[in-house]
Amino acid sequence: MKKLKKILFVLLANLILIGCTEGSNKTKRPNVIIVVTDDQGFGDLGYYGNPHVQTPTLDSLAKESVRFDQFIVSPVCAPTRASLMTGRYSLRTGVKDTYRGGAIMATEEITVAEMLKEAGYTTGMVGKWHLGDNYPSRPQDQGFDFTLRHLSGGIGQPGDWPNTKKGQRSYFDPILWKNGEMFQSKGYCTDVFTEAAMDFVEKNKEQPFFLYLSYNAPHAPLQVPQEYYDRYKDIDPSSGFENDGRPFPEMDERMKENARKVYAMVSNIDDNLKRLFQQLEDLKLEDNTLVVFMTDNGPQHDRYAAGMRGRKSFVYEGGVRVPSFWRLPTKFKGDRDIKTPAAHYDVLPTLADLCQGQLPTDRIIDGKSLVPLLSNENSTLDNRTILRSWVRGGPEKYNNISIRKEQYKLVGNTEETAGIEAFELFNILDDPYEQNNIVGTNTLEAQKLKNEMDIWFDEMTSSPNFVNAQPAIVGTVHENPSVLNLNDAVFERNEVMDQDIAGWEIVAAEAGNYDIRINLGRKSVSEVHLNFYVGDLEIKRDYNELSEGIIDIKNIQLQKGATKLTPITTGKNGGYIKPFYVVMTKID
Image (cartoon, rainbow, N blue to C red; front, side):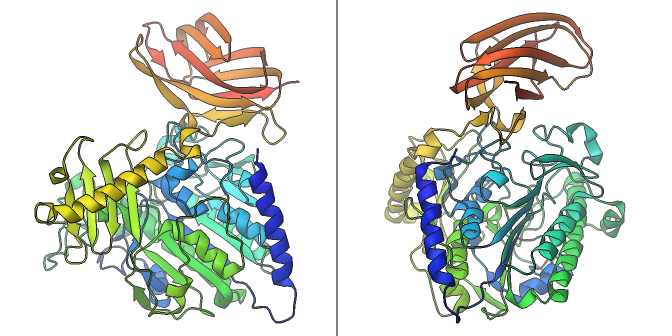
């Protein structure tokens, strides 16, 4: 349910659009394609010195683009995507984690897609969303006209229930969701997503369009067509760096095999982008289409990372510094590097600037327009402060948190009561690989940064969308039935059972009767006991045998409003059986 402020924003944007489009001498607005890959690190490109991975298309794009050498994102997937979509720190949007209910973005947020749609763009989203799988948090609820996506944080993950049981074939012929309807695709996932992206471009070539092409590769599970794996099966990913003085992680055979598969997946992405870019050229759209390429965080596994410390989930540079290429031939002079730090939340204000979109004025926008930097190599955005934090389950003082300002970066991996000497301080200009902790000789500078970190942390954790999680709204015309998956479940500790128990925060749009199906994800379960809670209702049932692992509860009456749904099932030994997913269908 969109709030009044969002409605007022839309009306204001329409008025501004009318004013902007009148007259005969207006500059043609660019099309926009944002390509985001998943868990592809800074070093997973030939352009940045990797002698093994073959990325001719991305290397060519890099040479034609304005490159942000210090582009900073969040340490993990969903927070990066929330910031990219909204121009705000992810904690402001309610996104604080990648699962367990922490990856659901508040519907009150105004996305890039909503902003550009109101500016006259047709909007499309293909691939990974990871910001909520139920109404009102799906991409089609947040401004996208066309959507083709998988569920959860990745194809085959527990929350992506249609593909989970396919195991090592989940990336092939995956079941996807096309404009809200289940869709059986054919082919390897990256190929499927590229075909959908190209179809979107073809259908919208005569009007301004915004395409968010968000590949799930090279995220684990590391599945790739054999022909691509064969390119790398005989390489040693740890070789070829003997004369490189930068830090390099130790790699055992498992890590080397992971790197081979990642490089194969990246080459497949590269070949697919070649097809997309050729289409832009053939349709004569290349010159007036802004192409942005970036990744969502650092590599998931240890491998070549251009010397940077850490990987995905860490706030060290290896976890948060990623490639960022911006190509728009009609406006920006390419083949140059920008050293000024930039970030994922700068995307929305930059596109507002370029595409005559209207920035929201009723909330804090943390990002800045990068157009001055993109247009003028002498421009700067001085004195930027960039903060990063991530802990499973939500932020903690001072655990895996960093603040970067001018030449200094302060990193906390310590207890809340620790003194400043327990932090790490780096001069990121002199020590880009974060090898020399200088906190002992710069305690005053470190304390200043810590004070600023404290203010930020308190502001983030007290923001309305952080405090009040976004529930699924069930029983609406927008989504009925609603399938509640594990990625968006909230887990609470049951001390009696000594287990974390899955449940879902929901809102019944109106009073009515529902059929509820609990799928335990098992073909056969015996001696099952169910304790089912929803609102004030408690149901207890025993089953001798569930041949399909499914429990049906018919004709349950729910009152209008917020509640929590929690199915607790135990097997014959008393062990907790986590629900695979729950289907809620409003029947009247």
